[in-house]
Length: 154
Image (tube, rainbow, N blue to C red; front, side, top):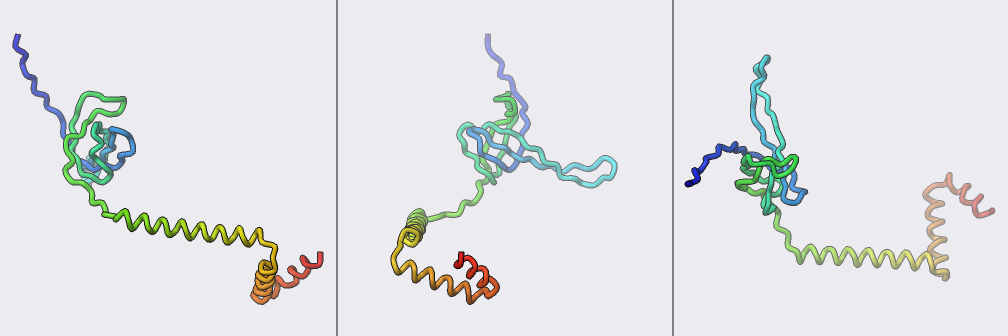
């Protein structure tokens, strides 16, 4: 017997990818304009479809074409046909990013070492810094000077 080719008319939709967090699945938002039955105002309606993307080609912001298909899972009944336009991604030079990150990490480590030295150091230098800090706080807020004296006395 010769098998007859059956032509399947499948629905096509065009929409924007709004989520691509899942593996082999993207969420596509398809908008359409419909007229309200009573008030005759044109209303934009948006529907979200879970779409099967086996190659993980689509990313958020892409304009895609999807096609109705057999159920792939509980919610996926559409498959990705084409990525029409891809979103623009800013080009970042990895070397400049790495250098900036290394510089920031070195500054942070230096600050942490300096703070650890101040906390652990019991020398005359640490006492001089503490005295200078107290003098600065006394000059800045005279109302707190009485509170500082009462703490020193106890």
